[in-house]
Image (cartoon, rainbow, N blue to C red; front, side):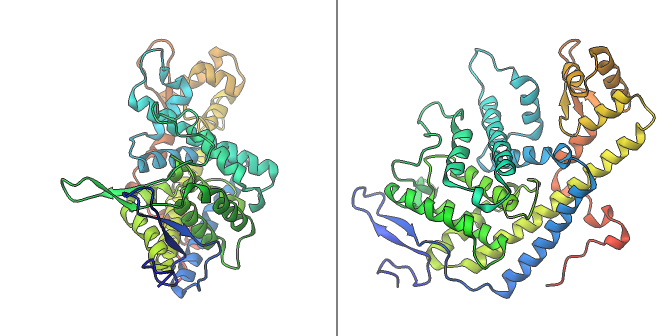
Length: 421
């Protein structure tokens, strides 16, 4: 046993008894990183398979000059899925509409849905700012600092939806955090896990920073899985820990050179397996069940990379289709059709600014694309019309189970065959 607190010796931490609150009898204190573990053949196989798919995903970026312009919707997809993990029903379309008209938020009371969209939009802003910072500072792990993590939190929560309890944007929590689970009917929620005491958080986050920057002898995906576990176990903030923890996964994928653009949305996997996700995290803390956690996490990376590859390939093929379809059309039509990949929701005025033409030329270009079914008007208004890139948004929003098999999207010599286990 470990220090008499009913944990096995290989658990990566210990419970510390608390006396200040009868409800909170003990809080967990994780060991410093890296943990002591030996990768099983199952984990090694999962890493190999995930890296193979990530390589295919990354390779799509080389097919176009500006992958960020074509794959910008992936950041929105992650924001959508992350918001759904938090229990809201925000869609990618909601987020793009927010960019177009800010949901026409007026002086009247903001609806719950509008507040949810605004908060999800903060996720996009935080990720965009962090990626821009990494590109400026250098794509390397040393750029991932405590200051960056707290700035992500501030971006996420500074205009969050909470009008009551202050979420303390950019600040570590001053008190205890409590992770609850649903108790038996009629009993209510019960305490499942209590993260470390607040005074221990700064030192633990500093240790996490060191691990993130220096890494280990293990593959990058293993380091990311370990860092994500440690962050969620520390639970350094009063609110928003899940969102910051998922952002950290994306940033580590980019800073480790696994991806050069945030094209993977792990939140979707976590949402589908939320109970197992929570159970796997707790099993690491209490049983040292690293092998099961690593397999679960890396499998999620692989599954989401496959889905991202299919959407990315469909977007690339659609862009090539537009280039071919409008090769002999007016220059404004051709340029606007390609600009839609970056901004699938657009007004005539915004189209005019985007492709640098006068209003009437932009309006003519939109009418051409509308007649071809490329865009559709969604307000029904005669003025202040908003147009939606229907074909592009179908790819972005299509349910995962309705996407084609990867084998249907590649040439026969590029057959989508994962390496054997």
